[in-house]
Amino acid sequence: MELGSVSAAHGSVESGTMAGVGKCILVTGPPGVGKTTLIMRICENLKLSNPNIKLQGFYSQEIRQGGERVGFEVVTLDGRRARLASSTISSPESRQWPAVGKYKVDIASFESLVLPELKIREDTGLFIVDEVGKMELFSSYFFPAILNILQSNIPLLATVPIPKFGKDIPAVVRLKNHPGATIFTLDKSNRDVMKDRIYPQLAGMLLKP
Image (spheres, rainbow, N blue to C red):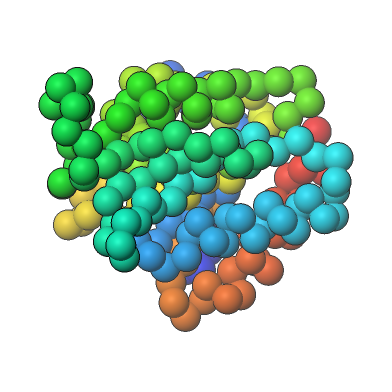
């Protein structure tokens, strides 16, 4: 379902594309609206209310130099970092990297940090993924890891971009159409109260087998 605006999200899924019904909360909204900040606040609340819960995953943030954005990095929940994309790197190998606008995407760096974080472990309580976006999806292993999480029945809290020019990323469409997905649309008018809407639902998921 979609909340923030609210509607059912039990759309059809291609046969065989998603076995299992995982528990998934997706946060979407325009760039800069505060999706990452919201996710991190929810994580902080979960740790306070349940100190023993094991959270796995990552969030993305800008790399800035002299007030200018020059790239993006991914950060694990325990603070380890790796480059996701850069507009300033000019090594011979970077010429082969895929690009999003002026940013070259360092797939190897991204995968080295993120893929181990998305492995299912016996004591994992919740996966955090910020975000399932165009840059991250250049990794051919990333989205299969997300699908594996959904099949595990371990809850997933993830951010996804809004459609660009009315066209959504196919992998994001698949996530939104997943039978276990609830979608929260964040905007400037509701971002201050959205945590109080998402947190109880997520906490309820963690209590269920």
